[in-house]
Length: 123
Image (cartoon, rainbow, N blue to C red):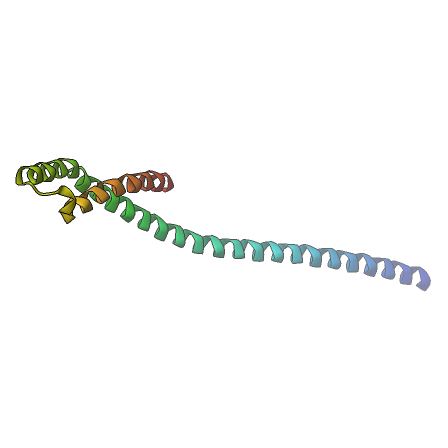
């Protein structure tokens, strides 16, 4: 009888040991999942902060480009007036520094407008 009891005890012990091992594995997987989720949310929290900073910088850049575009809208008329006045006075327009700068600025604003269009896609 004691041999049967010993076998039963060994069987029960083996089952308990297997159940404990199974539970330990399950707990380990759960802990791994918790660590994974924690690391993920830590990274995305940092990412969210960076994205907010980038969005703010993009909005500011778009606003500055809009202001530059508004100023540039007056340039063609101003360029025409300066060229006309230069002709009337007999001055070579290429000798007028501000006229050259206005022409360069007016060309530049087109590039900024394209950049603005791309930046708006990020918002």
